[in-house]
Image 1 (cartoon, rainbow, N blue to C red):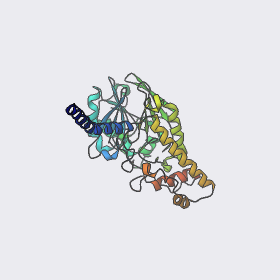
Image 2 (image 1 turned 60 degrees about the vertical axis):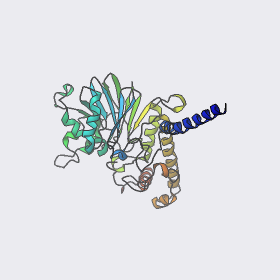
Image 3 (image 1 turned 90 degrees about the vertical axis):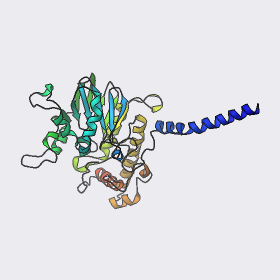
Length: 347
């Protein structure tokens, strides 16, 4: 009897030791891991993946996501070919192309740019020169349709006689200037919504059958929202965009699952993640508005540290988008004093 009891105890301890790491990993996976282990990027996608290269992640329906390519790239694949939302950084295109090629026998047919920043448009030229001319656009002999709001083309191109910041092949060739542009591709309705936020040319892309929303930098759970004042961005615009996303997305049980959200950077999210971020932006907006109403200068606002309690999650003192830069841009967008803010590029 004692020997049997001893065996049971030993077996229980052995199983407990072996299962603990597995349970911990499962809990971390369910929680999405640490939200922001390094400044400006999260653990499941973004610039921290440079060493390991880009990674293809399944989302749901016909949608996958390429993480670690400068910005997140949304991939819709099927018998008609491949559609991308954003094309990542220029230096990652060969690896991205190799990842997505097995998903469809067809070529990359559409690239939708959510804004003009180079980490979202850097792969445009590559995909525009690698495919066959499309039957849907015989007149221009285009090998890929690059879709964006019209101000994205304005910023990527240049007036006659001026030098453009990007090669002509990378420019959008299918722009829209109305509130919404619709596509039907791979048996799925795709809605492209113009939604000013970080710039005046942001687009949100909704895949109706798959129930996936690609947000670009309007929603980036790895850092404070980018506010490009020179390109028409504003903190209030970002908040309005987040509020719109909350209306569009439908959660499953207990706010988990349901509509899946692919942010500009970081891990795949759902409505619960969006709620946390939207609440943070709302709180900071309200604090800044109160400080401005009380006549506080920008220097006084910075000294008061209105983002202090959120800095461990979203803040950064180094990199291309610091907490100080965010506070300054947010203050100027709310107060109307926008003349000296520099443009953020290549987040």
